[in-house]
Image (cartoon, one colour):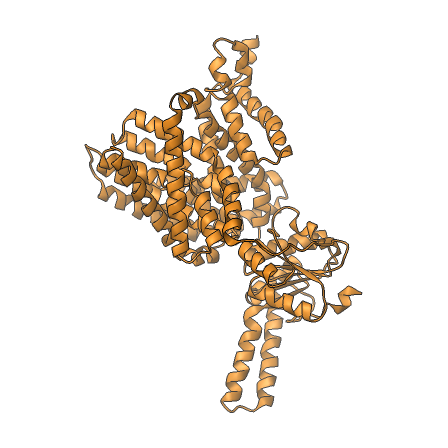
Length: 588
């Protein structure tokens, strides 16, 4: 009867959830990243941990993973959902702005690192084709690990995202290249061009149909007021997009990213992110567990010297090359150092390239196993590399000014974003004696602000309790100055729901964006292009000899038209002001 009730699937699920429930809180108590915790679970309950003792101690079967290969689809789904989440946080405008970084630093990092690694391996006696295959595989960095650690709103995160996106795009051409280098190669370039053309057509189809179908799909799901239907619709979109690109020969994560970008353009992106976040976190945890399960500690111990030397060599070479390339491309020294170290470890896609190289008979089976172990160990130390990179970045940039203490009991304005607009707002607040504190996720901007005497702190306003720690509940106002439309709308909506009486002033790109911000709950939304355009028009007309009176009248008329547009699109009951009022009365 006991044997009939036993289920390997349920047993494995119980082991994963039980171990995570014990180990992750324990690691969190000591402020150790959960990434290491999940990898440790894999080491513990995998076939090379307690699983190796099942034959001599059968009762251990209830505390180990009995079917490791069964976790593969869930692990892959975790990476797919991670890229989907990244797409939700991005937008097509931001992705278009990153095109030079993706195909500039992204291509340079992969090609130069791959060639250096190939030359080093060739010098050690590896055949040229095998060295090239290993070099291109080891040059890749872990999308799942790096994007879980890095904040894509920071310079380091943006650089990492650009390089990782190019690596994901280049994966298919690299696999075809390895096939062409095989001793009995056939097809080659023709198959590659066919796959790329088919992939391009699939991507275009996803973009075209997605823009028309997704808003209607989620509108219907929202009308049901059923969380289950909404979640099912979200997962359906992700899976269909991933399968579409995979069927075309591209990576499924490309489809997941496109699905996220498309949903990010709709008003339902916030709910989709909320519903899918638990699944993404759990599935990505399963992926990290599989990484831990792949490490054979006995084999590592037997070849400890060569494995440690190889791992250190790969990490050092990639960190130096990536850091130097970023510096040459104009990044700050601290940013270059931190991003270089963060991107130093190999990737889950390295394992795919190694498998392809083995299938093409470019490397021997024992060589593949050796570098698979190096890859797993390199990924395992990625969180430690991130910590070391942050410390080195602070050391390279030199000491910073004293960080101001924020008194949450004192009423002050909070400026979110400290770029050119945020700095000017801070100047005006200081000139009129209004206390403020500015927050930005760009460490370079924060450091420069502190050095120049501004009250700035480092943090990401969109994550955790960053604004709560600045006393947002007692703030005189919150001013959003960053040029990130989607993020601004989310934060405005979140704060309006938590603090109905809080004055929220937001920078808008144009009248349409201002309307969206008003709908999200902004007290005032100021289109940055509006007043500049009107002032420019006034200057041109006056210089052309038009009388000042008619010019001013036409400016006021145009401003009223834009107010009416914002009122209609924002569904407002009264026309908005196109400039923020004084905060003096807020201090009373």
